[in-house]
Amino acid sequence: MSDSTPKRRWLRFSLRTLVIFVLLCGSGMGLWFHSAPWHLEKTIHAHDHSAMTAYFSPDGKRIITAGHDNAARIWSVADGTMLAEFHSASQSNVFATFSRDGRLAAVAGYDKSVRVFETGSGTQLVEIKREPNLLNCAQFSPDGKTLLVACSAQSAFLYDEASGFRTPCAAFPTGRYDATHCAFSGDGRWVVVSTDRAAIVWQTSDSILSATLPHPDVVNWAVFSPDQRYIVTVCRDGSARLWQFDRQIVIRTFREQGQWSGIITAEFSPDGARILTASGCGDCTIWDVMTGGRLAVLRQDAGVQHVSFSSDGSRLAAASRDGKLSVWSRRRPEYWWGLAWLPEFWLTVVLAGAFAWSVWRDRRTL
Image (cartoon, rainbow, N blue to C red; front, side):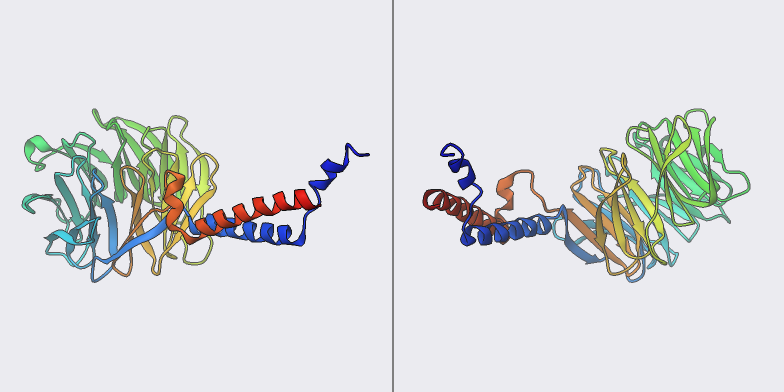
């Protein structure tokens, strides 16, 4: 009996110890909640009307936005100041992006043009037109030597830097329907073009059709994962689909809940492990590629048109219908000492010490 008494004493706690334990649990939960992975770093009034796209520069120090106020603008991530502004004759720009080295920017607008600018000087280098067709999207190749343009002329066209981006060197037809969006694979070997009821994949070098991914409605968006294994598409029905490229099958479908919560655009994280979606209800959702589960939901005041990762995955940029650019960043630090700025951290430390002291006291007195 005497041998078992010390063991039983560990299960006997005073009321003081139990109260401290409950407070410690609550403080720990508060620390976990308030050190959430993402927090809103800054909000910039980027456009007078809807902001349509937002992309980081390769070095993560700038963001380019396109808006419905006939302008595309480049912003400093550090302080939110405007670094450059590109105007068009149109009342709307629908797409703007950087080249992979950040030296050039391409802007597509409702003036039926794509304009290429030098980001440093703001000089317009070329204006691409295919009258009377709309140019819906423009993407630079990974090596920066070609520019892919999605056109309402039932094709996407490839322009070569050697010609000053003036003459198409290849075409990727989409049949009877408009090309709504286009993107290169990470290695530049393929292009994916979204159109009515399909996303079509072509080999870049010889314009050979590689795959057709069928959908029940118009496909508004399609991008490759960084390793080219997957393609994520966004359909007009408000869903996003994850395709395994080599097998051409849907392995996961992502949907938001609510009447106005259809997914509008989707992007992969730099490591390809997550998918970031923008929805009309104002939610930016981070999904796990392997499980399909929600990792985080970042809520905004207005519907989100587009959201993207920085090249290191540490920040998000969201373009909203109210013209705002929202920059989110990771709050959870890489090392535990970085939690020290949270008051919940110190409360948890104090309560943990008090709990250890109280257990030691109980052991001595009970």
